[in-house]
Length: 254
Image 1 (tube, rainbow, N blue to C red):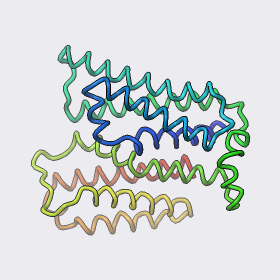
Image 2: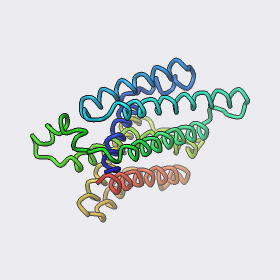
Image 3: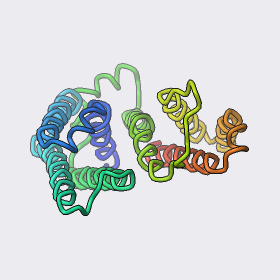
Image 4: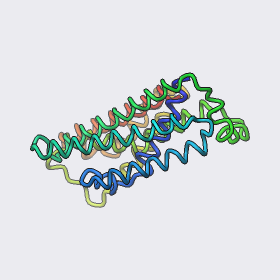
């Protein structure tokens, strides 16, 4: 029961905090409080809209707790960063930005888990039967499986790319230069497709096939890996982080 509610709330959080938030807003809300408020408002509107559309049976107190907790965490994060910057205890370096991001998301996940535990006595069927349940019934889909896949796919796309990029920012070789013609968006999409394929293989029990995906990816970069030790380690770390994200998504949601 708690897992189902947690999955639903996590989907809403991923949509509101990653997919409905632009990189420009994410960058500017660290600089100006008005952008933090703007994001919190946009997150609240998005979340409440999704709740009313797909979870019409959800009580208002749970909705308000969800959006207010998110706003509180973001405001505390902004205030803490500004205070530490004023004391010269915090700089906008890659390791600091990474740690702030990871702590921020950990706080959000703990909050979502707490709300899911608070809602443990709620009847999931009553939560979404009148909304998304109509869609489930029309296509003969299992609510639990579809929610699991939705959370998994949402998690291993943009959020996973951002998490991996933040972690790797502290280990990027200082002399690392992107080859001419390299497209970062293409690299992100390759990573997403790689994780989706691995999740599919794991879900059907074909664990050995995951190795084929990693092998195919390594072949494309073999020439540079063999000549540049620093890049090889950086590439290996990124690949392992991507694999961990896929495995975690498969184990938790599928």
